[in-house]
Image 1 (spheres, rainbow, N blue to C red):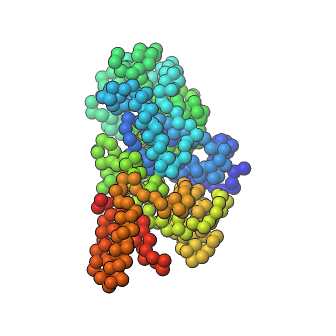
Image 2: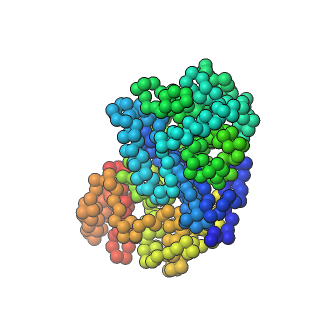
Image 3: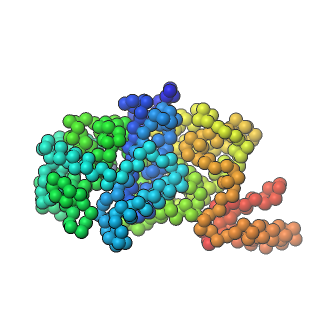
Length: 462
Ligand code: AMP
Ligand code: ZN
């Protein structure tokens, strides 16, 4: 049933690329930490979702579509969510129903398949309070001033994922440590809620769960005590994932939480992490109004998932142009399957999702297809589909227009006709001026034997 190939994945906990061996090839289990839905997702969040969607697709390719379970959770209780709901005069459920839906649509726009399960933290509070009680009973957690804290000193393995020593972590802990903490590095499992705040009854009074316990409980419920791969953006390796490991393995008699840990690099702007707090972010929602989702997705694939990706409009433009070519070269290809994907592509993909190398193979196939190889065109389409591209027909692709553009097709056609007339009259200065004007509208033209064709490549200048 599964293909006889070796998938190598870089594992954060051993800092090595390791051959992937699933616990059960009939049910390969993957958990990736999803968003906190208080607002629109930015394209950095999108990058991490695309990385794990790619992994999901590769696992399905190797083990079969029905043999991979992918969980991407939704954190729908958090202080920022409570603040936003209060500001807008709605319940947290009302707010997060809306933001979670937008998130799902945005990720679909980036070509991400729906995960197998998309649990919401607030549906698992009961399980969280049970796991916390177990940790208290086992002496790994303690109650203090309405809070329940994990006692880091009770876990000799604490720090095993990130490889940090306790001394480093103490030095890194915030200068101002809450007075009720026994150790500076102890973290919150449960916190009290005031009367007017959302909260749940618990053995420690009305309160709400901390962030880390959410993933431990949703993972346990949907994937079991030990599963194959756990991932997220690199910012989550410490403390979020370290804390998940501590909670889960202490609650499960020392069982390993996940056999492989994968972390994606940051999407950056001018060398800095894109984040809401820095204010240097672009939402996926807005970008999908300016670009086809596949161009955003391909732009991400140009950088290896573990490397930082520098976000620029130019690179999305380039991705759009590449896709224009690829769609054109594969326009005549009928249905293809994963069996049409050539070894040059699968070997790169199976080598820790080496997408830059996959893209080099695809460029080569495009070149061969332009020279007339129908087999190369087939291989290109099948490979693109395997990584979540070519989701539409060549006609649909050519008909794409940015939702946010105010340029209409007739205006473009008129300018192209005026340019042709200028050229016919040998007024090349005027012809060039019109070409520049089109470029300013984000339109690139190509003169061919059958006349001039055009495509949108960017939105600037409008
Ligand atoms: P958050 O909503 O901040 O909890 O983040 C949701 C997911 O997006 C997590 O897996 C984060 O690691 C990831 N993430 C946040 N910012 C970035 C970024 N600039 N680049 C890549 N991933 C990010
Ligand atoms: Zn998590």
